[in-house]
Every structure is written in structure tokens, then in C-alpha cells.
Amino acid sequence: MAIDDPFKHASLGSGVFYKDPLAALTWLEAAFGFERSMVVSDADGKLVHSEMRFGDCYIIVDSEWSDHIASPASVSGKNTQSVYIRLKDGLDAHCEHARSVGAEIIQEPTDQFYGERQYRARDPEGHVWTFTQPIRSVSREEAERLSGLRIEGWHR
Image 1 (cartoon, one colour):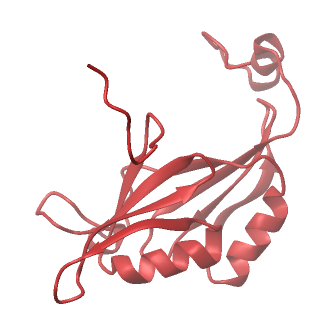
Image 2: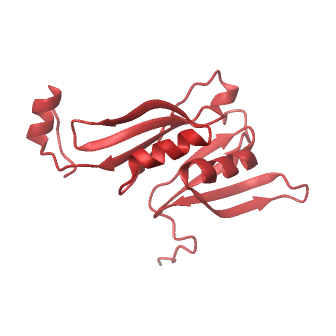
């Protein structure tokens, strides 16, 4: 028997872990436009769990709750993942806004051979966020020609 999802989650989300998750919530709102959808705290006000939405997707923003969970700030700035967010438009303005509130832009907005424009930013604890926007339709054959790569399958 199927049960309706009361949280209306997309099929895939990501968890991002911080030393200071409450500060991260505020920063992610200000810099990238994420919206808080759930914040759960204990009696002492410590964050237990939180979720943020961006369009029809969500991320979990949480603390370093176990020995095997760490913020990049706790592991010499290393990342084992990057969160990708697809914008419908306004990528360059999004980048400038993020920069204006303290995001470190590690890749300026750049057109990609596969028909998207993207930029990458690092947040205050070192997580890398990649924002993309479609700019033109590219066939697999054209992408192979432009990149010199062999591509199996294609998303268009």
C-alpha cells in the first residue's frame, strides 16, 4: 500500500553538514535563495534537523552528528560532494548576489560545451555549490565534437 509523502519531497535530496548549522541556514537563505521548510531543535535550542527548499527540490542542513559526518571546515576544506542546483534563468545575477554576501566564487559564470552556463561557489564552511542554467540545446554529436570526448547516452 502506497503512502502519500506528507513532506512532498523530490525523489532525491542531499544532506549538507555544518559545524554551525544554524548560521548555515541563515547564510544559505541570504546567499543562494534557499527557503527554510523545517527546523527541529531540542529543548536547549540546538538544531536536531532542518530542511531547506529550492524550487521543487530540498536539502537537509544538519550538524556534525557522528564521527563519520563532517563539514569541510573540519577536514582541511576537502569536499566529497558538490551540490548542483539548476536555475531557469538569471545565473549571472545569482552569482553576483552570492558574491555580494560573501560566497567565494571559485568558478566564474562560464558557458559549457553541453549547452549550460555554470558557476561554482564555496560557502563559509567550505562546501562547493554548483549552479547551472540551460542556454542552448546541444545534440550529443555536437557535444562530442566540441569536447573531443566520447559520450554514451544524452540528456536532451
